[in-house]
Image 1 (cartoon, rainbow, N blue to C red):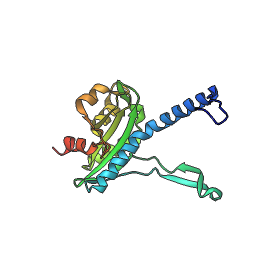
Image 2 (cartoon, rainbow, N blue to C red):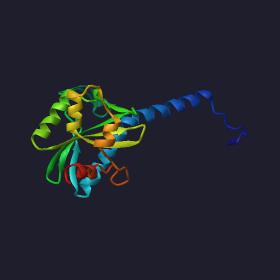
Image 3 (spheres, one colour):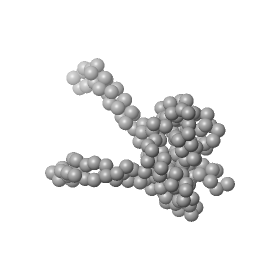
Image 4 (tube, one colour):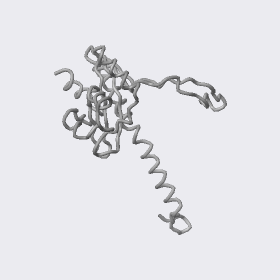
Length: 196
């Protein structure tokens, strides 16, 4: 590109580094949010189409201090109590409760990503006849699976390893179709596992 003075634009090396770093930070920051955002968009679609009512459970926080000089900005807060799972709702007259997790591993899902209180909560959901599962994204493979909570609970409590092998997902989980509307067809996977 030539400017009116006839000189061409020369990009500085520092500009290039800054841009590259900024792009890396953006993509890294969005990795964990992408699955959640896809589920949220899918839930909006399911609600708008009258198929299901599933919501993201808010994280319970206690606000300590708010700065009103910049339009009610929270400056100090703490988690009131541990959150249970990410999502809950109703589908085909049944209560649904699930957790969504990402992994960068190609070979296994690390159980360290799951808290003990989440296991306790999902066991209670199952005990009361609800549907409980995990949606696990293998980011490097671009594959998302729905796995019944009982498998995860069993590995968590009785497994001899600290992860669930990828082969378990291939064998016992349902691969979730990724599309435009809904973004994730996870209720098709729910139908396949729980409403045959």
